[in-house]
Amino acid sequence: MKRFISPIFFILMIAGIIGLLQYDQSMNTGSPDVHEVRAVATSVDNTALVDMGTARIGAQHVTAVLMEGEAKGKNVVGVNQLTGQLEMDEVYYPGDILLMAVRIIDGIPTQARTVNQYRQGWELGLFAIFVLILLIYARSIGLKALFSFITSFYILWKFFIPSLLAGGNPIWLSVITLVLLTVVIITSVAGFSKVTLIATLGTLCGLFLALSLTLIFGEKLKLAGMTAPFATMLVFSGHFNIDLQDIFYASVILGASGAAMDIAMDVTASMNEVLDKRPDISRNELIRSGFNVGRMVTGTMTTTLLLAYSGGYLTMVMFFVTKGATFTRMLNFKLVAAEIFRTLVGSVGLVLVAPITAVIAGFILCGIPNQTQEHKKTDSSL
Image 1 (cartoon, rainbow, N blue to C red):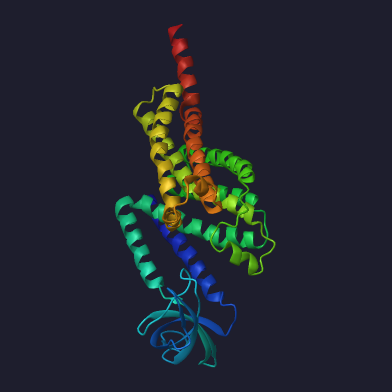
Image 2: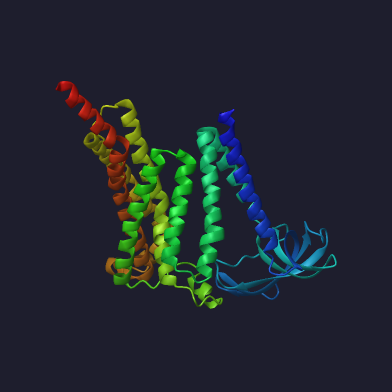
């Protein structure tokens, strides 16, 4: 009976969190009369659009049929305002499935505007493939990993981001969030055990040291935090009280936390496995084994961070190359410096996590038992 309790518990918790997120989404409309619903475009009017090279500026009028809600089946004409920003603008065509914001009064749509292409269905399909593969391969561990995945998203969405928008201190909020995420993720996978305690302590110690480096070198590099996407738009949307520099620092540590947890768990699990196979191993030998595992893991993980961060700014690097910019100019450019800073601080955090975790694991896993065994051996020899 006990073997079914844990899976059922995690399934219920996952369903509850998803339900809360869906309820929050349905309540967050901004106006009781405005509803975000799916619609299929039947025709478009592009006469007000002006071509500006590869971009378009102006208003596109989209006639669409609502696919859901109390006005389902009724026609609306929505305005799609194009501003010339290719990374934001979308041009629609007949047959496209759209997400539209529609004002509905007594079942009659009165105003409408386009929001985006409706991509949620395919996103959910891709997520379902991820869940299926995860559960087939990892089974109960995969279910726990799914629980930690959704719970982490919930913590970020319902606690961390609203607290930042409310003007909370980003550094302290990041510390609290890191502690919550580390405990939830590692406990979900490893349960309440010594492995969980060791991996949690190792992760947090390494990240706190990396946070110290972030604050020191961030000040030296004079990064104001305006390098993140939508940072300027966020400020000019009315949030003048937030500290974008500290938010940037928090994002650096938060971005490296996942890899840090991975390394801490790898080192801890490996050392625990070694101790199970060799209960007579000494503390120093076990720590050396942990160091060896940590070296191998960090050797690839630091490169993983480099590829993950640089991949997001691939077009920027390509632009510099096409303009013949010198390597020195690239290194001193604000956006490039921010990504170098993010990559190096994250890498330092990873390198620190491995040895710290190995030392903590050595003392917790076999420090006291080995001392007891040594006393017994000494007494027996006498």
